[in-house]
Image (cartoon, rainbow, N blue to C red):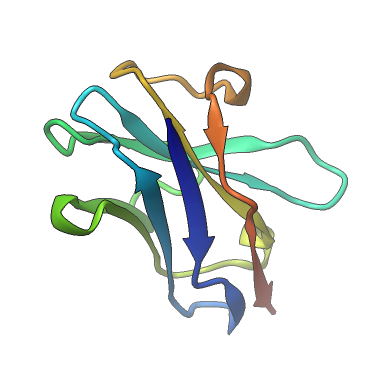
Amino acid sequence: QVQPVESGGGLVQAGGSLRLSCAASGRASNSYRMGWFRQALGKEREFVGSIRWSDGISYYADSVKGRFTISRDNSKNTVYLQMNSLKPEDTAVYYCAADRSRAIDMNPDKWVYWGQGTQVTVSA
């Protein structure tokens, strides 16, 4: 079992950058994937991107491709979401998720373990 814990949210101006961290307590073995999702007020939770522990291959939603980067530090059992060129529409609660699968899956219902979320607010 893996318990993700996010940190690093905050307030940033449009065009700025922010890095979120997700520490996975427990053991996220190479069979796991880690994902980032976000949920804006009044909207459904949406996929941002994901990464596989085994080989670091990442996948992104079209809305963040080229601006966001997911990386991992196996020694720290931590995944990062580097967010650049932030826009007001990126404002949301960002969640880290984990699952014992190596498949790419954008459906949040397919992910088992979730963090508590961290707020990211981008001002215009």
